[in-house]
Length: 488
Ligand code: NAD
Image (cartoon, rainbow, N blue to C red):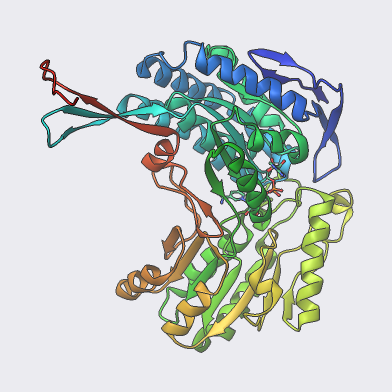
């Protein structure tokens, strides 16, 4: 058991209230750590530290090359501590080892990517009509509050920190109260790398209080939030206080469309991964399967046949590819949706219950669950469950599939399986979602913009778009004629 402090103004500090929160392993209930339980007062201190670092500190004037090199150091330190981070992520949020390994590698690569981009922030020059020399320059936005969820603690923190720092901002990061460990460990890496005090502040605590303060406080210039759509709406409302720049990465109810001309085996494989990777606790999870009627029965039978290959258990155990849900409360929510699905009349094909056996007794496990004959109006077809529950809806025509896919308040991700690439392009072109795949699902690239249409969010993270989100734009017009114009 480790006792953590949080990082404010370059110091490791306790919460002002002295309160702490227990962090437990969702697979075993084991106590892993105690972390400070920050409230609005602690958030205010962190905001003041970031404000001071931005307004008075050296960070804004630190050459981009130096900022980039510091980010390279962070990337290297993550790789030097690869196993430690992998184990921490598995224990903290319950993910299987292979997925934690993807996350840690991606996080290191993301810091490297944005370290490289720090020196590639360019402005423009314009030919203005009166002959002035006109420049467009890019500047950091200022102090950024960054709020992340529990499903990818290290990676979501990285997606926020790396571009913001590359662009020259100062930040206050708040990880989820359920999974704060890797962000705090990252804090030590920032200190060791030599980031000036106050440039990176990391506070741990719940949304009410600490999180709300980051969204509301007028000294914060931008709030970047990843989490549920309901919370995102509150963050956006609170951010109106001082018209903050806002980025929102929210939920999804993402369609996977399988046409009868697909590569059958490959489509089955990816469909299971789309739905059940990271226990389905993925914003982009392919949780709505739209499958063409001509292969519906055969496809669903094959899915069910392969489900027993999804080995549940503690994510550190050999061969485990599905861990527990993050908390007992979240498991209750997922189980309540399973009950709703049964009550609504969907056909439960497999799962729907907790696995039996001693190794599952103390964890928040739920079996991979597939519902067939789901009607588009059912709640399990419309609402984000955020667990290992797949809802299958059959369709007949391409037009019907597109209409069903778009029949959602969300627009985060979508996948299409077909061996007709023309059809694949045509269908994806008509789907209102920001992240799409043809003939696979989930691979995510630091170079590509991540974000959603509709109620799945505003703005994009990653790639060049990700650094844009942390830059202001200024025009500078230079008059070259020393003679008075004679206006008056
Ligand atoms: P959540 O909305 O409950 O919490 C997210 C974060 O917001 C946490 O740090 C929490 O403490 C904080 N928070 C809660 N209330 C707040 C408030 N009023 N003001 C400010 N901050 C507040 O989400 P969660 O349960 O942690 O994560 C699951 C959700 O995240 C899912 O809906 C999922 O789709 C979404 N998500 C989206 C993406 C994406 O890229 N679009 C990625 C991962 C997760």
